[in-house]
View 1: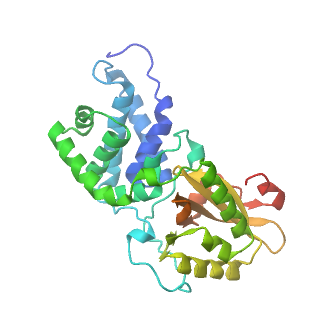
View 2: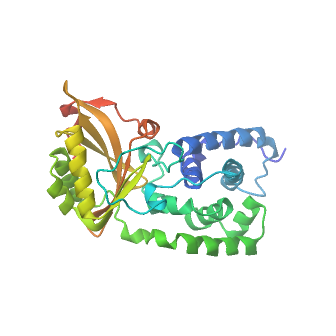
Amino acid sequence: MAHDGEVDFEPYRGELVAYCYRMVGSFHEAEDLVQETMLRAWKARERYDPNRASVRTWLYRIATNVCLTALEGRARRPLPSGLAAPSDDPGAPLTPALDVPWLQPFPDARFDVGVRADMRLALVAAMQVLPPRQRAVLVLREVLEFSAAEVAGQLGTTVPAVNSALQRARAAVADAGDAGEVAEPGDPEVRALIGRYMRAFEAADVPALVRLLADDAVLEMPPVPLWYLGRRDYGLFMDRVFAMRGTGWAVTRLTANGQPALAAYAPEPGGGHRLHTLQVLTVAGGRVARNAVFADPAVLGAFGLPERIFPEDSAGTR
């Protein structure tokens, strides 16, 4: 037997879920892949040798193999802005593309992985474009800071191959932008901006919403493949939303992917509000630069949000 006593895997579950999420772009699938990782590790626990690798390094090797197997022959998970040009018709039909495996947001409150710039939606979307092994190298080296030798061992390859893959991966995701430009949700200025956005949304005050946007703000709504670019079309689409669903919405604050996020509740005729969408906001330069709006029930369920709330339920979330 290569070690004495029990090997405790549970302390690593949260960070492994975050790792698998970066690899596959789905929170639910990441949880399943980590469960498979834990099962494989438990079955192989008597063969684990602490003289060759730490428990953490060993678990990441298993998780990487599990993820790479899961990704074989699979299409990437995109956001609408990664598939086609922006729409110039705010009245276009809102037809979901259910055959597309859309990128999903990460519910920060489920695991204590901290506010991480490397978890933000735009970067995870950019990672999905990479071949799976390059994706693994980028996350293991740049995010998790394993050495090139450790990554080579995890992937069963050489240090020069790891360094080459890392260079190609860095170049491919460079367009995702500088993480330093994206403000964190706990920043007082960001909280104040999001508070103003929430109040304008609840009041269905489209001009006030538009004043909070960057000139080139992006609005996208998976599983609907449409997306809009710029304050004008963002505002016209919001006019349509409020015309369709009425005014008097309720909004609560949370975070996703280390970014500010909102749960939007549409008013119901009999009183109260029903969960409508989760909005993941990117704040840069003191303005809302992107809004990824998710309506998939599976996504909403991952965040543990109540399906209905009443006005007093949202009090104190400003």
